[in-house]
Image (cartoon, rainbow, N blue to C red; front, side):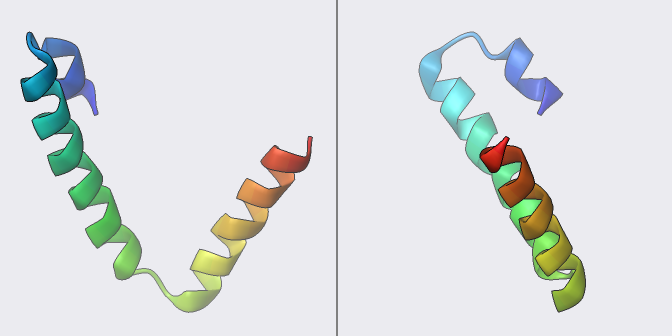
Length: 49
């Protein structure tokens, strides 16, 4: 997401944001199910605190 800092226009920002988010989603799809559950548990802990 470091590329977002180099964006000069809102349109460019959202384009880069969408591309970087798509990369993250692809990585997450490849994770085993148990690993995904652990990530969700950590997110729940952060929200509760």
